[in-house]
Image (cartoon, one colour):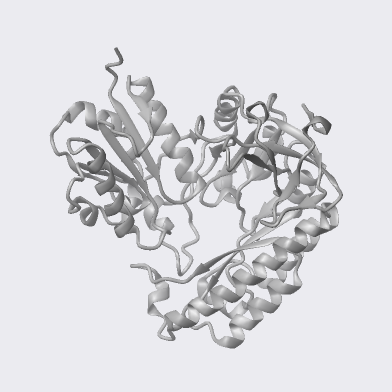
Length: 437
């Protein structure tokens, strides 16, 4: 009979949160707990929150209620960025037993074991006191591993709460980061995604830097792919682009936050570049890697963004060779400097601008897919069975699907991109012609 206590997790937000949730889960599994799905009965439920996600309070309340429906006697812990920013607000949610901030979340097991069934309250130090870097990587629940190489941010952009939720920029040294990468590689994953808040700031400009890190990661045995999750344009140097272009392991996929194509708005946002630098980065990538996929983040409706500013952004994005957009509608965040700007864009106008850029993103993605039609790539298939189909991504982040076969899970398969299905995904039908390695 299995008498192990069960623990379930729900993660909101970014890849960084997923890597940290997975690390906390391993701590509990090593401590004798059994991990289960969030919708199942469990003794402990952990909700890892996000400060970027809209309606964080409502979402947190909903998941607490769901946990207590599954087990009214469960111990409920809320951790993560929102827990660091507004611990008192979360502690008032009925059913929450413990709230842990940026550093304390990694001590959850100890808090529970020390306090057993007592309501233990809030444990969140001042964010300026958060100085430790806690290595993390995800495993078990996804084909790819998200490897945390950096945390925190020193930039304090006008719209962003992340420095207040995660603290100043920090990272481990290259030697210890390589150790984490090797541990992840030993689980049998084919692809490792480098993640963090501002990964280009690895090393904090001291003895080591991001370029040195990826050069060392490139030598690790057993990993078929490294993918960079997101990197600021002012930290994406020519040398980094040139190295990735020459590498057989780092894939031709870049996600580069833009936020606005208006230099006036970029300055107001306190971004550290102008639109020309961004365009130069895109041009450099496409010169060396013509098939590269380039994604961009963009915010619409930032205070002071006039129609002219928005149209500058639209025109800029329409003309440069990016492959897709992540479009965010600006929303007010407590304690950010953007709140001091009086020229507020009406919510309905923000939504209209979001819709325009979302449509542009769909067109750009379709065009990028069409450009790659007929070419040969390698797909890493994931584990989900979606209506009898299995899917995965090429090295340059094009989704491909084929008939489900569990032997394809976590396999790299060579395919030719021939048929675009009605859902905009490339479809491969003849499994007998596929070559795995």
